[in-house]
Length: 168
Image (cartoon, rainbow, N blue to C red; front, side, top):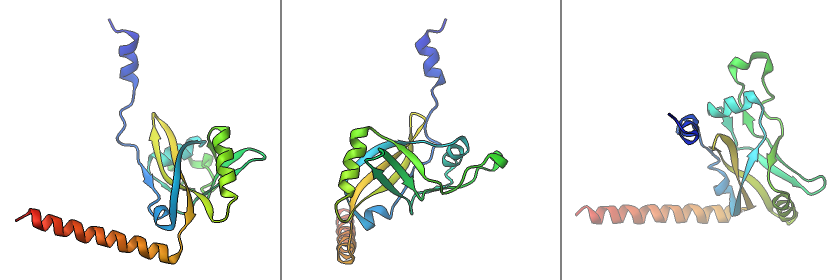
């Protein structure tokens, strides 16, 4: 005889085949000061395409407004889902993000200062729901990017030197 807890554990899906989409360019172009996990409202064909990995967040950005209180993702491209045929979604429509009111207000106030923007860092699934990790960041200038590249190269050289020394 099975208990309710046993039956519930059998129904849970095992994660592993769900994609995690990263915006690798965001941390290069922006100095990220804080991050926030939010939900995203998607249509049926959109969620199927996201699970298939047919999505790009590289050119997307987020707009937060205090009146009316809203958090929208603009410019994310979700490819069409073939089996949906005539019921497919628009590939680059604005999508509503789900967060607490005080978090939306904080983000809206932060973006009013010069140079601050909200960028999506990654899209992933948690407990079957699509989530987006947002980063509040300040745009890097050309010299900041050069500094980042120099630090990365220096770290690589140190790691190479250490691996050679350990191998002796």
